[in-house]
Amino acid sequence: MHNAHDIALLLARFQFAFTVGVHIVFPAFSIGLAAYLAVLEGLWLTTGRQVFLDLYRYWIKAFSIVFGMGVVSGLVMAYEFGTNWSIFSKKAGPITGVLLSYEVMTAFFLEAGFLGVMLFGMNKVGRGLHFAATCCVSIGTLISTTWILASNSWMQTPRGYRIDPTSGQFLPDDWLAIIFNPSFPYRLVHMTLAAFLSVAFAVGATGAWHMLKSRREGKISSEPVRVMFSMAMWMATIVAPIQILAGDAHGLNTLKYQPAKLAAMEGDWTSEGHAPELLFGIPNMKTEHTDYAVGIPLVGSLILTHSLDGKVPGMKDFPRDQRPPSQIIFFSFRIMVALGMLMLLVGLWSLWHRRNNTLFTSPLFHRVALAMAPAGFLALLCGWVTTEVGRQPWTVYGLLRTADSVSPVVLSSMVVSMTIFVIVYIFVFGSGLGILVRMLGHEPKEGESNPDPAQAPEILAIRTHPAVVNASTGKGA
Image 1 (cartoon, rainbow, N blue to C red):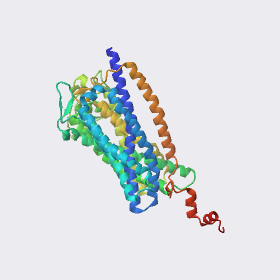
Image 2: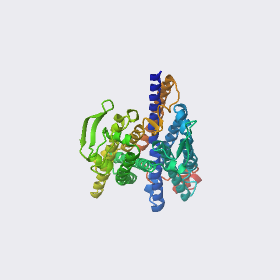
Image 3: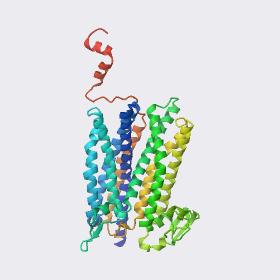
Image 4: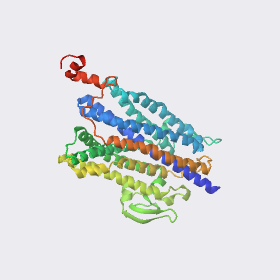
């Protein structure tokens, strides 16, 4: 029976991780893309350049697909809290449930209220009002991020609560302390920058694809393609180094409030000063040693404490039953960092091409930019694996164990639901991503007027061509 419970717990964790892993890509895409659309429309209104309007119309189609998939995939997780994690919901619900309800009442209502105007109101409302709608949708995605990360950060570094001695529930004492818990500002900045960086490389890869295609066809890339590629590379160049600095600050915060997680990330077993930075190794939880370790002396202390002799925690400082699974987060953390450094290098390389006027003519750079399309999203997923697996064995860090948070579900039911989720998600969201990729495979249309649907094509033709007017009225050709 104990083994069946352990397997059910593992499947419950895997199911939630799977649904979150699929879901998180879409909100991140929506956050970055909504901000990009607001910038494009603002530039169009400010400069009057048609190219910005062309790009806005091009990317708003992608936004509508991504936003829709994000809403659908997010609904599933709300049900999973009740079906698979009912004990957690009962105990932490007075805090996390309220924070998530704030997200619905503020962000979701704001997005839903203005999304229709943004998608369909370009020729039905004034330019200023339409721009305001785009900005409201973009702000709504950021507000949504704020509330969700406030809830998640509270689970990582809980503050402002008291525990009811009878029910074991976490009850709020100080909402400001709950929301602005110690890790919240760092997670909010890190996640928002990750969304911007992910979208920058997705947009850049789209531009690179079309430039490579034009080159194969012996044509010159269109102005919208060049502008989207240039804007994406500027974004990567600016945001990548800021993200690295934000990640460093987040690491210092983790060292202070979640030292066991940091020790597992680094693969360190004994607490020591002058610690090396392990580039590679295989942490062994049984022997309490990192096998095949390859490290750089002193750099671990320098990075983690900003001092060569700074003391770095080791996993032996914590009881065995309170250690995160180092094998997973050791590699997920390094993949995230490697992708971050690679994105930084691509951004700096783009500056070199700008200086040499080869940004739009270098096929090698365009191939690299195309290959980097998923880099931001992969780094984001690795970051979330590091964050969430590193919190184990707790759902509320140091207070409520994951094993004590799961619903008393039957193993067979969990196996069936997990199988259905995987099949349905692969079919539904795989199809959605396929549609998105095919759509982005077409170049943006230049000078697209996007007339009001009430204006039929033949009416536009009459207004444009006098000869058609004559033919339609029966007067001379």
